[in-house]
Length: 224
Image (cartoon, rainbow, N blue to C red; front, side, top):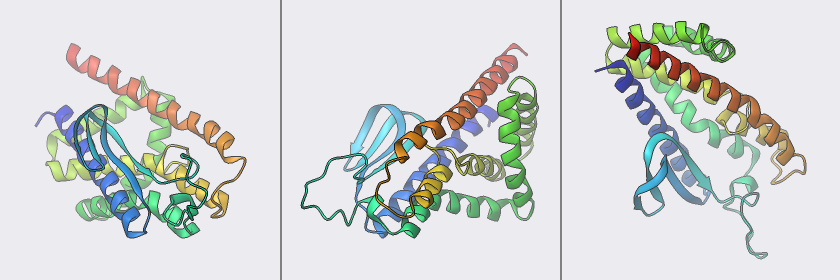
């Protein structure tokens, strides 16, 4: 399989597992799930609360949350995410990443831990130098994809994405868990909206830098 197709398939499988595990965890915790969305863009298929989108590039889980919706005054909100005990508010956003991390480490073995730990530095270094450092890392990844089977390629890719999702920025699983800890389990705090907006910027900048790096790498590959 071509490395680019492997990468796309790895991403689709990663996002499917991530969102599905979090949805299952929410239901286990008694939290109402508003919708489960796989992909982005126009909706191709809807079945109950599950929505399949055109582009399999992301996805999200929408939960009952008083910070995002207006509820009736007599609603006790016992099934709202932000009214859960602190440990549930922290564990839920980390559940999908935790399962994927365990699965990937199970596939790669002991070497997976080193790859996972080094991924944090690689993500930052590559974002700071998308035209040089990121290109070297992508080239190493392509060589790995060409010389290993899908299971190992998925495990390595998953470890890198787990590290990215655990970064302490809003919009990422690590940032969501960190904000829950900062709230101390409270349903709402006045400063959260402002802090969230500021914490979105670093994560967005890293994502855009890597998208540029992928685009440049793909352009060079087509030229070659």
